[in-house]
Image 1: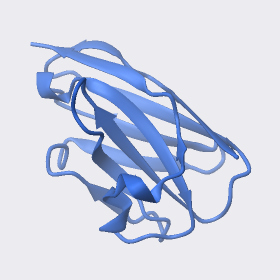
Image 2: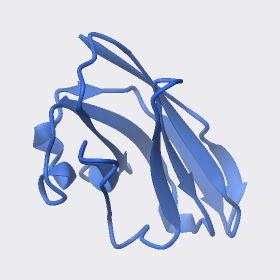
Image 3: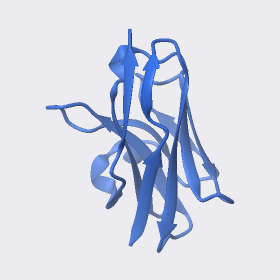
Length: 127
């Protein structure tokens, strides 16, 4: 079992930056595909950013492209999502997800790929 614990959420103002972190522990494997998703009340969970497992190959949703960076720190067993120029529509609960093995830049966006999820961290962006 893989455990994922997110942190770094909070209340920020529009235009601010925020760094979310996901600590990965337990029965991890190498490589692993990792991703961040977000969800607002009454809506489906949507893809934000992902790592496919291939030499830090990344993928981003159009909504965050150019404003977000996903990265992995192997020494710290963490995956981070750095977001700039936050907008009120970025407000959501952000979830970290993990799956064993490599995936493609297309499949990393599919929530059905992931069997391991964190409990989420709330991000609220005020206008």
